[in-house]
Length: 87
Image (cartoon, rainbow, N blue to C red; front, side, top):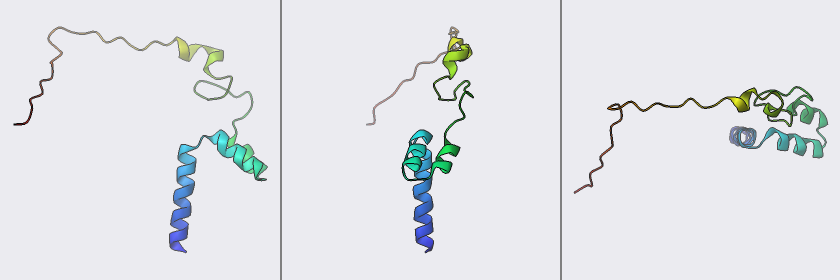
């Protein structure tokens, strides 16, 4: 019984970690667990930056407009790597 509980918890962890919530919700809905599926789906109209739904970052534009900071190379600050083969 203890081994069964450990294996079942590992399976649940892997599914929750690597399957997107949308796929889990669709599977639950197809197997008759509509209330549990509704808990996994995001609320309608509640988008925001990095929310993953259709109205996400494209609506506000603040995430897409941010540019990555440019790194300025300072002379003498960078050192090349030298690899020597094993003898």
